[in-house]
Length: 312
Image 1: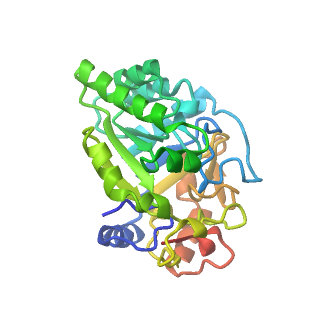
Image 2: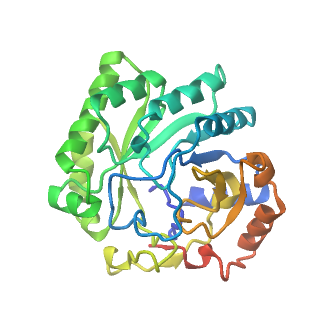
Image 3: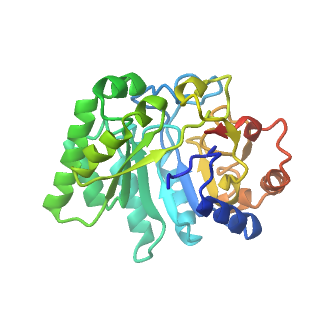
C-alpha cells in the first residue's frame, strides 16, 4: 500500500477510512503540521514547482516564531511536527536546532514527533551526527530510482552517488551512536521511468537495510505551473482525489506565518490567516477554514485549487 500524496486518486482503503473519520470528527487542532523554516531547495525535480511558481515569498522564519509554533503544537497534542514545506529542510543549516527545540519543549510527552523529508544532497557528516543527537525521529529520503541517469535527470541537482553515500553514512552514524532514531526510509515518486525499475529499486534499498515506498505521481494541482501528465504511464488515468483529508487534519505554515491550504498551494491561493495575527488554533477553527471544509465535503470545489488536483 503506497503512501498517498495530496492528490492521490487511487485511494487505499485506509485513506477512505481516514477521510470519513476526520470529516466527521475534525479535530480542534491539526494533527500534523508542516512548517517552512526557510524558502529554497538544492534540487529542481522535474515534477516539482520549486523555482517555477510566480507567487513566491522568499525568506527565513524567525526563531521566535518557530518556537511559538512548537509551544502551541505541544500544548495542543499535535502528533507530528515537520520543519519543512515546499523546500528541502537541510537548506536550513540550523535544522538540528529546530529538532532539538521540539524535543526540549516536548519534554516527557510523546508528541509531537519530529519528521523531515529531504533529497539528502546536503546531508553532511556533521549534519547527520547533529540530527541523530538532536533526537530526530523519522527521516525520509526522496530518491527517485537507482539508475544514475534517470535519477540525475529527475532531480537536476543532487547527484545519485553522493546521496547514496550520505544515506549510508547516516545509517552508520546512527548505529555507532547506538541510537534508536531516526527511522530511515526512502520514497520515490512513481514516474513511468521509476516504475520500470521498481523491483531493482526495492532490492537496492533492502540490501542496505532501508525500507522503500513508492509515492503516487500527481499533477501538483496547477497545470499552469507544471504538467506532469507525460511522466505517467500511458495506461494510467488522471482522476480527482475524492477522499482528500488534508484540510481536516493537517496544517501548513509558510516562513512568513501564512497558513495555506496544502503543500501544493505554491501560488498561495488560500491563505486562511497568519500566525502573527492569530494562533494556529484560532485560524484552524476560523469561519474561512470551516467554510472550505464544508465545500470540500459537498464537492463544491469549482474555482479552487482542489478542482485541478489529480493523481494517477
